Length: 631
Image: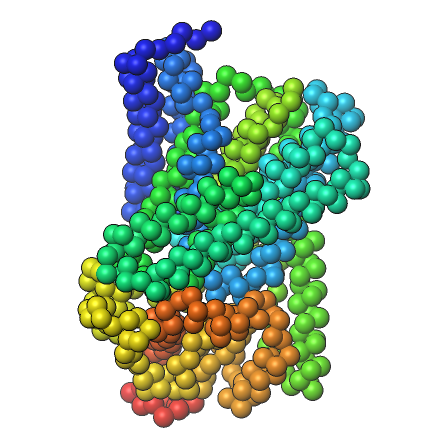
């Protein structure tokens, strides 16, 4: 029995415990700095943090500081209430919404059905092994399903960081990212729902009841988060909080966290509420904020998320050796890892096959509806992307945090198995991602056009649009406090002079500007991803656009975008700022594409021998009609 510490000793040991956590955190970030300047991408800082935590855990285990070891024992409360919310909020706030809604059907399918399949497959494999007496603790079916739900969520933090470094195709990045942030929420709600069935006989009626509870909790939590986000958007729109950036920034942060804790307090899922609150704040409230608050919130949320992610992996490494309740059962651990791999296979390849078949049917439907007019192919998930999705199935700290809620006589072996499975998948799958990109020959070096107006390009933004981001000023019209945001004069850029055919409308979510043989032109988002370099005449393009919009309004997310642009954005957001934001994105995207074409032509001119320069001039004349030829 532990001897109680007096106040002075408790303070001293608490400080020492925090030191043993913060020092590895510093080492992790310094290592990250070294990896970045040396351009070493095979190892990520989270893996370094994991090993640093393991080393500190071994030292504490072998040393005499037992009070410190007990203080550093994994806490489910700290994990779910302190460390996880910043990651979820940053994920929702930094979500590329145009890409998310463009792949909405694919992401939702993987997040919901994939998570459900993973939980069922893991639970079934463990239950079968237990029934065949291959495992020492005999587990009931409901225990196995609860265990499966803890490991059903993916946490590809390491893989996504490597994707960012290599600039992997944004389509693949956003599918993995969207799936991961949603299936965290799905797995938490599923775990809580299955826990309500503990002790009862598992029947068809109880399964139907559990499904109903799951749908109700998820839906109500999502509605609560959206309501908080919309309320904050209205507050920022109809007040002049933008004149006081510090207050505005504090209110945005507090509203987001209030949605989390309120949802938890009323029996809903705080993670789901926080996620959708973050998405709503970015979509509606963001354009009513001052420029300083826009930058501050993005920077602060991202910084907190980075700290939390690294802290979590250090925490996991520590927990491998500081937990006195860990019970290692080798066969249970091996079956758990095997079940995780099989479940990921079942959650990726069958779903991808079904989605590709539906995509083929949709393309055929469009072809028939257009009376034989050629149609751009809809997005397919190629085999190499499916393999990368499978490889991105590493488990994270959410699973271990949920496992702390497992009760019963078999709780300790199950919690230990979850922890080991998380650590092994992070090291094996996360540590070999860079090599898998080469093995699968996945395209890299692709610029994400949806980030054209991110805060990393504010200098370009100011040069292009004028004005400066002074404190307390969202846009130039904030210099006059008597001018309301929606009544503010708007200086529109004559984009027709820069981009032929560009109408300046705020439809960036459903359209983009790409370069083709006929110069810069408008195209649908499917064409942007699949046929950006295909030669198509302007007349055929217009016909395809008309048919596409007439027959496929309910394509992934497009129906919501239409309602959003017509009704919701004018009601909840600063439409002037939003329109300028979307035009700025389209302008910068077009300028990037134009610059890329110019660079390509110059490179070709240098590569072609002198006696073929006339042919090159003819080629350039065909590519860019009306432009001066290269000499």
